Length: 249
Image (cartoon, rainbow, N blue to C red; front, side):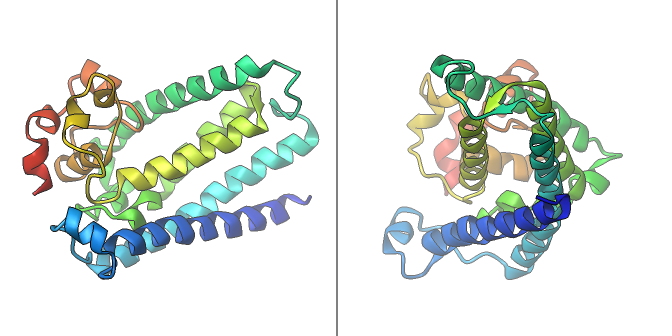
């Protein structure tokens, strides 16, 4: 397929995904007809559409960039210069799980340090301010990436598929994980009980409340999937554990 057709194709797919996933999640949880949500989260109110419109515009701009990176990946695959493969026999079943977890850890590490750089006072306005316009995030915020951040995320996947052998199923699983995690982290409320933040297993994962704290405080909780780097480098807000319940009110 022609490179520009790939770009057009992925632009349409990513944009449809955004409106279906982010929009559908917003309607489900924020709809006045959803009595389950209202009963469980009495603090939910329809968000300011002024900020939502800005999130949507930013997401459309990010779509163009991410689609370009996706087109590069597929065009490279057609030329036979990527490390993507389709045969399960090539590296064995065990490698599927290993590569999936390994890429998640690698992405989380890269994201943490790049995220901190984006928050530098000199760079923040130009690289990351758009995403933080919504101090109270909603699902619409999940893909509202400033162009430089969208490019960084796209470049990460581009580099990975040109350097690390990845089965197509693993690539799809990674993209699904990124999509679902982004929406969950920007729900605007917490799906889990406060005990999750203190559980020996749950405390290592970034959740909606954890990331919402970042949107409010800016200099804490930079992690993408895991809390490890925040804990290790002293950017972890321990109020997440000690004042979890009060934060939700």
